[in-house]
Length: 226
Image (cartoon, rainbow, N blue to C red; front, side, top):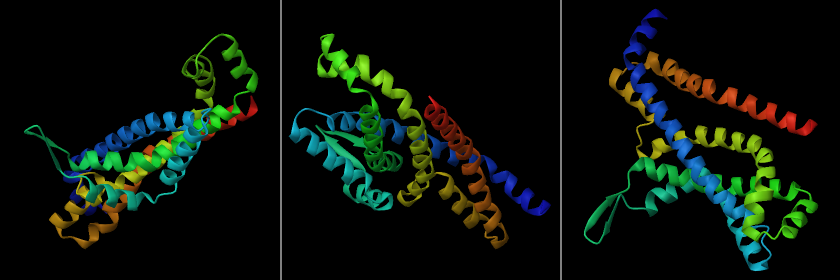
């Protein structure tokens, strides 16, 4: 056991650096998903039937798409470089991973927003209308502040899923935690380190995700009793 620990210690900074990239990818993907989810969720309650149906179709398409398939789709669809007016704009693999993870997450975020908006009593919508707010103003000043607390627990759970799914970024060659673990195993060429290395990967994700999942459940229970 001591020999295994001694063999892994020099590689610990590399693993932690890879895990930090996982957290960065997960956070950015969740940010994009929330931005898109708010728009789609609000459009699902639009007065225009066309907007409602369009937003619902996009939402269902995104949330029911396999994350792995979306990752491969984005990997092959987007180039690594864009040439715009003679300027080369690079699109690194980690950014592709962020975009890929944000798509199915946006579909789930849209449903979270729609559900929260639907739970707001109709009287609140009528009061916002009576105050003279526009449709956007109603959402911004009256409805969303009330719905936000209902969105937090499921959004936190979604963030946990997105962060765990960030390991799929290794398929794009991103140097995150899983890729780092493979490099370590290849460099050491020691089969006895296989389980300890992947066990450490599992432990890092668990140590980060489990407290967040408990927090999400606690917040959900508190809201249920109110």
